[in-house]
Length: 494
Ligand code: UDP
Image 1 (cartoon, rainbow, N blue to C red):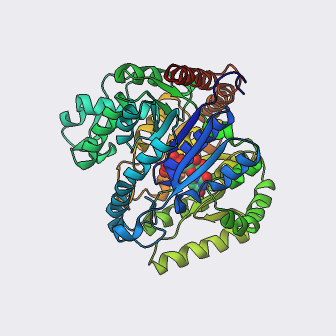
Image 2 (cartoon, helix red, strand yellow):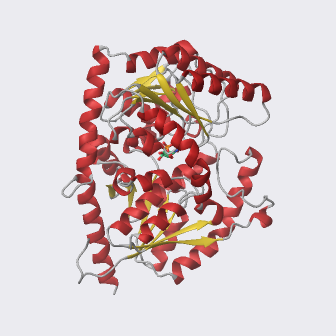
Image 3 (cartoon, rainbow, N blue to C red):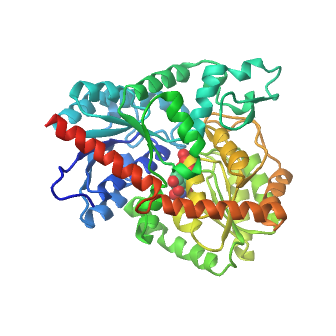
């Protein structure tokens, strides 16, 4: 791709230290490499294991892409070796130390920006300082958002108009002002930093400012998915932005890509046998009959909630794959889950996958009929790719905003009825009962009029998603335009 006579662009990608931000930004980096850009991804050793497999595959395909490893200063900040990310396994008390480590890495990253002499950088939203550095060094910084245009627009609306302060109670509904649709939420459903100012509120202000001083932003989204919010966001922010999604669909075309995603080489080898087991089971199931139940890379549920999910799945009568994680130090809970796994495996009703699953591979299997999901943005986009409806169960971050898009705007999901936002590293106090989970599953899976209409809508969106990344599609055009602009900037500098 690209003209031989045009200059080759050199780029640096800097993902944040958490799986949910690394995966889409690395997919995006790979997308630029696919389009002829030279790509260096800066990461730490432990974090790079999540994606190195994919980079090696791309490299073997002749693409100009590599990882530049920097050493996480674990000893300096008093962390054990290997704890260098914000993950569900990072003990809460260690989180500030990971931030400190990241802060200490700033001069090294800055000097890499100088020595590697990129034509542009794409850095995660959580590196607002990179906007100033890029401006100082004279190349464009593009900010990567891990969220949807709707979620960013909704947060902007709450910041500006504070509708939650005009309600009587935490559970009274209010409309998010000045958005393309009348979206209703409660105070309990919006993130704590929007509810009342805290340190994170300050950080988000800095991030917003840095977006305004950056060249523009990129999202894992596509125009047809949230066109009104795409336009709205660009208007209210007054910034340039490019939807380049669905990135996972675009760069993970082969089964080898899908199987490698999120695993280290060792993990992939270890999981192979297990994978053959559930894949064979899945292939034996009838079309559209199996539920895929997963809550992303960061979820934490108390055992009381896991028990409710298990019963709901069993009672639903549908077959299922449930990606689940054990809670440390709860033997009773572990025994419950292990017995449940044994029982459903023997009856052929379901599979439990521990910790991490090759989601892209599973979702595209014709046997899968719908998701039960936390509305993590990447999963929303991936469910649309494959044309599947979702039982929405938002938990933290901007999930409740994403639920609005899925349920109220696109009408491709059934809400489980989650009422309370929580922090990503907390269990939360809400336990959704098996009956509520069961009702939502029934509405999604049992062939009623609403279900048929919902499936038709999501299938149409799936077609749009595929079209977006083909020659002449909206994301394709965005990519071509963005690269063209970046080349012009490079030529002007030279
Ligand atoms: N993912 C996966 N296997 C898992 C969990 C997650 O492949 O077991 C991938 C998923 O396909 C998605 C990303 O990790 O691309 C998770 O991002 P999302 O925004 O959906 O949720 P988060 O992890 O940020 O809560």
